[in-house]
Length: 362
Ligand code: SAH
Image (cartoon, rainbow, N blue to C red; front, side, top):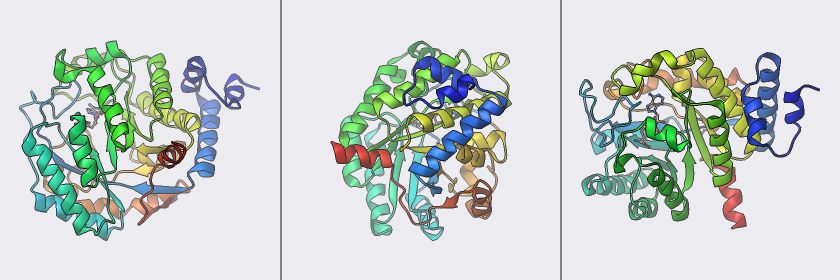
């Protein structure tokens, strides 16, 4: 038996096991994907749940060295959708029978912003008569703000830790209190204690990142007991400081493959969580998200941001469909996921089974 196939029979995994799995190639990599897919089918089923993604503003107080909407990037046009535009996008999600939406934006901790969100959550709930599940992805906030939003009706929160290697975290962020690893981690703990289904994730293939780092990221997700994960390849953006390290990166194809392996290994490590096949995968390969589903992901976040502004929310360049209206992207969704033996979980919330299991046992 090969080393990979023998590791795959284990019930628990050390960091060095994970490094070996992440390094698998050829037939062994295929075996990894088959194993993760089987686990997904058995535990979370063959449904893919949709979260309509609304990137409602690209104003951001932060200056992350990798991100295209960082505060210091003056070459982009800043926008802020009106409440009515956001509610229209929610209506579109309802018409498409997506039972869940994600409100994502740049970071902003002002009370004008946080109160606006509370108000919006209430309006979305009223408009959908409580049927629409609301996920937030609005960065670092105080625990009381997280609580206020939860009480208003948001039940899931995504906050990527980006990398769990503190030194690497410092290298890819400005060194100041607004970009502090421990604060971001504290936010994740706050989110969980407030009662959110808590999601995090990392970028894959960052400059200076090693396979050991990625294995440790996976062990962190497990130790934290995270409910949802969204992770994808790092894609360099020419208007960011990290762009100068572009020659030190692995090829885009390798980053893509490594991202699929991260999804597969995570599914093997944490059978019952929700894992998103992220847009960044699709930016590299037109079938990227579908390949992510095949590797063990069970969530897709179709972008339903009203067309005209989609091109202005470029975290990285070569983002798919920036010019298309939401409706045009939806047309091919069903056919595409059918190609990887999955069906759409229309009208279903598709909550994280891991969250349900942990809150029952608490
Ligand atoms: N401001 C919010 C959410 C918006 S950014 C927050 O910080 O939570 C959403 C995610 O996009 C980030 O967490 C990061 O992981 C990812 N991202 C940003 N720049 C990227 C890049 N150049 N390549 C790949 N992913 C990137």
